[in-house]
Length: 288
Image (cartoon, rainbow, N blue to C red; front, side, top):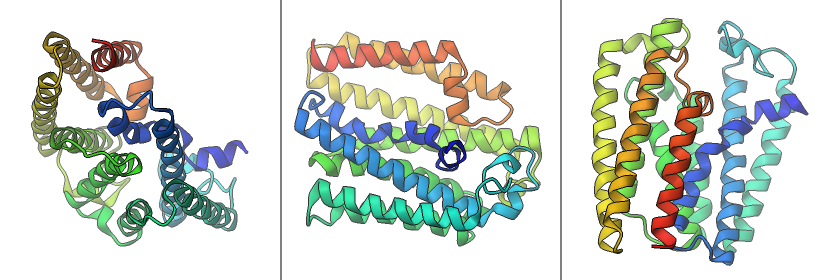
């Protein structure tokens, strides 16, 4: 069972918290019906993401055997056979479709979004896009944006352009940082696309995207402040976001792999900063 959980990359489900953003920022967090729908959407998307990870591991099995850390993955190490992985991925696809049917019935938009997510990731892994510089980042970023719109369509709310912009630039920043550290600490031989990047290029564009992230988030907070009487609290949220980004950047400079999940959960200070930011944001949205 442990190998199957590892194969499904359960720890990466944290990325799917983006599905709750439209719920939270539309002021509907305590709407039980919408909260239940968002939770089901979270489960559906998490299973879809696991499906993508499994198919990617099947496709990259031989390459992963040569990688210093990926060789320990369940399929590459032989702990889970390809046949078992295909069976699990089929079950996950069926569950994703059933949960979407439960969420929206005959409405096709939600199912189309999640199937599109699965499709672009299959093309990414098996169609060679993962070996194309810039395009590999574009597909990964699009996956984060789809999460937000999937959550919004689940509860029928609109997505702020500044929310979308923040997610786009932050996702690109994270992707650039991960590639930067892969090249710096593991070399460019572990993935074909890495040979087409340079550390200098990744560094410059990382911080361009970080600056755009903070600018977009500031405008997003301004938009929220206009709708409330708590301008000072939103300014405080911007300040905390700056500290979080600075702390994350400092960690990425030292982190051997630059994996966002490992960085986030591996540092107490950044966890505390994110927790305080979240508390102030929720307090401002729902009680002030």
